[in-house]
Image (cartoon, rainbow, N blue to C red; front, side, top):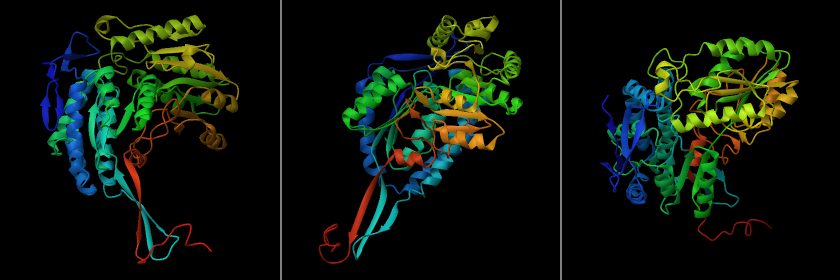
Length: 497
């Protein structure tokens, strides 16, 4: 297929980087296949995008929220129209199987229709004043220019999670996508353009994180940074925004665990474990990377898990028979391979997989075998650090209480899961697990757009994406007092004897 030529999108114009420099995006299943070229933007390009967004903000914030929402509804309709085209491009560019890619686009569609509805629900509050003839209320105000820095693993869904509520709230946005998925971001921006949003309201800047991304985070005229990515990069983003007094929303790593108790439905738990561990080749921040198995069922569960894992089919995401696609790039492939070396050095036992898959057609891409590690203790690096690949570790537990303690013993706190038929344990788990998301008898993956998404500890900084909580990220509260008494009233002074 002919490679795409991507450009920056600034003030309704498609532009190359001022320097003319470009980068490449390649198919992770066939590294020789060039999917797209895209601009290597630097500070000058970022400046142009920020100027455009700042200028557009002056008028966009004055458009009534229901009218702003109508643009987003149109984006949702267009995403429906282009769903299959986007899914195929996504499979080629970042590797996930077509079924998952369609789901990624569907998340964007769902987010569009949900966010559009919120355009008529940007509620404030009214409350009685403590003084006579005085009215008190609160209202939501937009923040300004929002920089959205997004990862490659959900190249349509996550930009939609961020951009759509931000726009409905009256902000203007600059999207900086991951350098592994520029084509998906470009097609998404074409849809925003087709929906007719005014010039400068939505902008796109391609490039490297350490160049274009860093320039956006540090730019004095950016009011908010919403970042999804690694905890290491997130720490830099948070530090910079704190120093420069920017609003910041961070969604970072995870080391998610699924508990399987002795009373669990094992067939159901196996389904959840396989999907949670190996969906998207384990390249989800919510992926199941630890299985905490009660000693009474560990042997049986492990046998069942090995049988199911052995049947998973590696291949290109565009192949309808593929269960597990490639890792996104050679750097990530080497990272996962290095963690297997660490696991062996620590004494973990490889039950299945454990190496790069390079047989036949797989030799042309970034494939790693679905891997199960046993004899793992909670203090091992592979039990504590985010691997971001198709690797899951098995840890034996003796009780519900021990399982909860081990699950919580991690720097992260994004998603969690427990399989049990005991309703008392289920409710105790909901209370005691330290994570932003808890599933009962379900895998650690599967977020829905109308519910808050995010975590605790090194996973985030307290904000949540999706749901009504996204409106909290992208708006400021303003308190308004209307005194119709005709005289000066002094709160906390005149109203008390």
